[in-house]
Each structure stands twice: as structure tokens, then as C-alpha cells.
Length: 362
Image 1: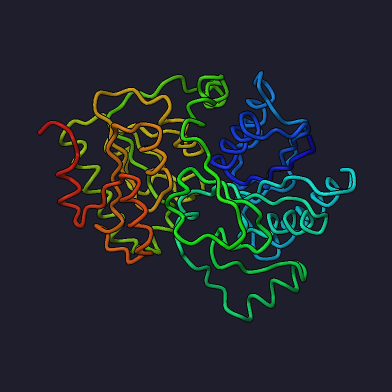
Image 2: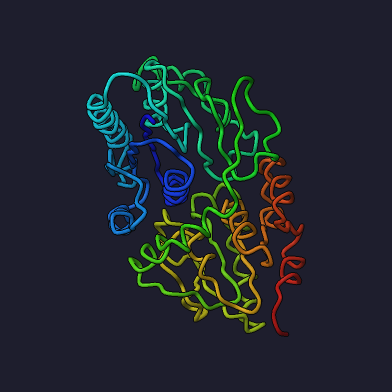
């Protein structure tokens, strides 16, 4: 039946990899490699190791990308990942395997995929969120591309989009009908929409939430705050002002609200949620886990360009998912707005319109 290797970086990847390995992958031997972008990996591993359906024979952290440092530190961390991945692959028998890669933009993913291509194995792209569905281009200049090849190796390629890597044999996403232009000769498969719910029913989500001390989530609104660096890209003043208006409206309408900052946020509570006496939740908890335990008569998720808004509509179909990206004035990828609308995410043109969509009293 063969073997499979999964390379993940985020909690979203972790959840999808666990579901694919437990419910879809028929390989006899499965291994999970983690290039960790967040510092809560130990909690996730504890939960997975205690899960009765844990599908992985090996769970290994190959590097810790979440550590802050300069350019040299980042390169050293990536090289450390290459070294640990190489050592792991050398222990596998000769021949290819099924490699599930959840972010091919990162060099660690390409390292695994190219090594497996040389072995004549099968490379599968696992959805990395909303980026799978857009034609957003990665903007490295030609000199930067050459520098990265020198740093990482001749095998490294600067891919145009998440699904355009030439050594992918298969693409697995939750909504394959939204992939407008897939690479030729690459199979396209659906990840069942109930994968998150199955993980919850079978106990993994409960174990993971217990690591954060969460049993259930009772509120009407969840506000998903972007990383302040992303806020700067969208226009920091406009972004902070827009979110502040929304938080004030939620307080005024007496909507029970929880604020969740981005896991990589370094500025702390830059919107002043605590000052407004709004409850904040651990930023490291994935939104998907929260949506699975969300109890509330009225449920609305508010964010901007986050994949979590699509997850919200998938997991809680009767909820309202609201992107204020356009209202902020962010001139991002038009394809992103198109994808949001196909998922059922509302995209008001003004903050006033967004406030009007909040289902609350007052």
C-alpha cells in the first residue's frame, strides 16, 4: 500500500493533513513533518499523539520558522529544515512515496517535492487556504530569484501561484470547482466538506481545544484581526479605523463579541479590544476549531483577506461571514473578492454598510 509524507506549517495545514491521513489516504505508513510557523506545535502534537485515530507513524518538527531574527537567522533555520528533512528521507526505503505539500511557496515544501520527484514518487498539493483559488502572483524580482537559487539549490523554483509548481501530480482542495486554471496533466480532487466536522466528532478537536483550556465558545460575533504588518499593507490608519468603528458598533449594539488577533501578531492589542471590555481569545487557536464549537443565536465572523471567512461558511453555513477588505479600501487581488463571493462571504463597499450588516440590537 506504500507510504506517504506530509509537510505542514500552520494549524490549518495540520488539521487538513490529519483529516486526509485519517480518512482518505490509504497508505500503510504515514509520516508528518512540521516546518513550524507558530510556537504552539507541542500542544498540537500532544493532542494528536493522544488521539485514538492518530494516523501517523512519525511526527517530527524539522524546523521552527516562528522564531524571530534577521535574514541570516531565517536562512539558517531554512537550511536546518533541509538537513532534518534529508536525514528523514534517507531513512525511508528507496523509491518514491506520496508527498502531501501544503505550501509550495516555502522552500521546505519544494525540497520534499523535488526529492520525491527524483524518486519518481507522487506529489500532491494540499490546500493552503484561499490562495489556492486565486491567481495572485508572487513578486520576486529576477535578481532575488537568482539569489534564492544560490541559497537553496538549483532545484528551487519561484512558482507563480500556489498550484503552478511543475512537479505536482495532483491538487486537493475543498472547492475544486473554483479552480479556474489548473496546470495541464495535474489531477484535481475534492477534500470532503465535512473533514473538520469529522475531526470534531472523532475527538481530535476536543483534545486540541483542551490544550488551550477551551470547551465551548458562546458569543454572537468573532472579529478576526489581521497581522499588523498586513494592516500596514492595506493602509494601517484606514484598517485600524475601520476595525475600531466595527468594534464600537458591536459594543453599542450589545453583541457579545470575541476578538481574535492573528497568531503572528507582535504589537499586542493594537485595536484596544480590552479597553472596550471585549473578550480576547488566544491568537494561536485556529479559527476552524472555534467555528466547530461556536454556540450563539446569531453568528457573524468579521475579517478582511483571511481564509477563515471561507472556513466559517463551510463549517457554519447559516453564519454571516463579512470581509471588510473592500470597505478598508484595500486594492488587493480582484480574484480574491470573486472567490469570497463564491464562498458566500459578504464584501460591503463601506464600513457604514458593514455596520448595517451586523445582526444585533440597536
